[in-house]
Amino acid sequence: MENGARGFDAAVLGTSYNARDLGVRPRVLVQANTIDDVVAAVKRAGRENLKISICSGGHSWAQNHLRDGGLMLDLSRLDELQIDVAGRRAIAGPGNDGSRVNARLMKHGLFFPVAHCPGVGLGGFLLQGGFGWNSRALGLGCESVSGIDVVLADGRLVHANERENADIFWAARGAGPGFFGVVVRFHLRLHPMPKFVGMVLQVFRMKHLEEVFSWAETVAPDVSRAVEFQILLTSGAFGLFAPGIEVAVPVLANSWKEAREATAYLTESPIRKKASIALPLLPVSIGLMQRGAARTHFPDGMHWCVDNMWTNSAMAQLLPGLRRVADTLPPSPSHALWLNWRPPASRGDMAFSVEANTYIALYGEWRRAADDAKYANWATDHMQAMASMSAGIQLADENLGKRPARFLSDTHMARLDRLRATHDPAGRFHSYRGRL
Ligand SMILES: Cc1cc2nc3c(=O)[nH]c(=O)nc-3n(C[C@H](O)[C@H](O)[C@H](O)COP(=O)(O)OP(=O)(O)OC[C@H]3O[C@@H](n4cnc5c(N)ncnc54)[C@H](O)[C@@H]3O)c2cc1C
Image (cartoon, rainbow, N blue to C red; front, side, top):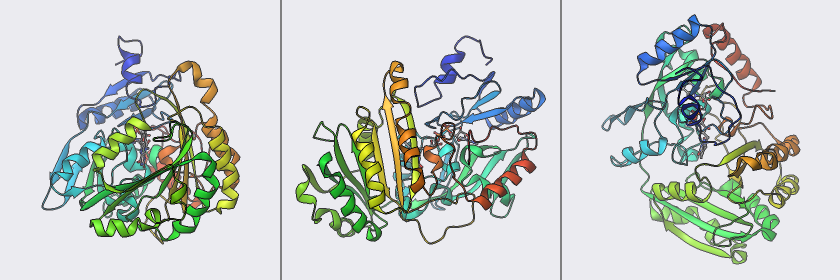
């Protein structure tokens, strides 16, 4: 479909989860139905000297696939899913919605660490690393990818894994929006489904912010890997309908007993009595948690500006910034996330290379285009103000066009640049909008 054709704008904008229209349009939109369509589109781009942008699930907050001119490849229809139950393997197209993949896997007692919200595409999620359900225990989503099928800049379709085209496979696990090819299939290693899934929720008034975070710092290092210890600051906290702190903690364990022990630090915490709402550990399905989060914090049709940082800084240093964030939150459901990540001592060799003990992300969201100017810099400005405490950023929530930041180690970035020069010498694929 060419720019100017009937329905072109709607088809382009319809690919994005973020409802902001930045006025950017490609020259050509290709909605691929098959892998052959992808090969043909890449060859056409070569003939016509068009740069290529790609989207799978369209959940890049920054709408990384929307670039002026060039050819935009929409892969949302590449959503095949073949499950080998006995072999605990699957082959999945990049256009798959991760939550739907898991819903199908769970029917067979299987599981994959997909993104936390419905709608997030496997394509972008797995390329940037993939901080999924139970990723503290199972590893990043990309660590459960055993191979990819990828269309390169010259139109060749190749397979890449640890032994074959190993450099391309290395890059595909962490390069995110700077990958130099089109992934048309992921080969996945599956995990057994956790036997117990549940959640602990405690809600505090915002005046307790310093106490809650200071307590969190003391317990964080010892929190079980079965627990996703997160604290959210929001102007419409659950049950308070006022600014507050949600300590909303999913746990994915092998038994109710294990889950209870893993969350005892919450249910028996000294600050629990200050909570306005304190629910015990409750069994809650992943589907329900996903749908709940989508409704309360990530509703459809919003305008977004998101930014983030990894940090190893002490809480005493972080607190003034977190307090400023809390005091300036845009209207609900905008929110800030503090996540206890604590990476393992080492990971396999892949492009992904920057992480830290704590993850902080700011999700500014608003409904009306008229408010773009009012809220569009909130997340960026606060993360910039805290940049001296940052160990880098997560590409999942990148905002590189507005705030260039570090997201790969220097050696991995240099290797990625060399690989791009080899596999995409003409710069056929768009790369990062900004970098340090
Ligand atoms: C509501 C919401 C919840 C989220 N939750 C999580 C979460 O729990 N964990 C987490 O880690 N992240 C999360 N994210 C971030 C998300 O993983 C990233 O934005 C990811 O890039 C989205 O993948 P996508 O395919 O939907 O996005 P897209 O916008 O389609 O892709 C993002 C970029 O990746 C590249 N790309 C995508 N597909 C391909 C492909 N097949 N081949 C080559 N390049 C490709 C392109 O450069 C593209 O611009 C969330 C995002 C949203 C909006």
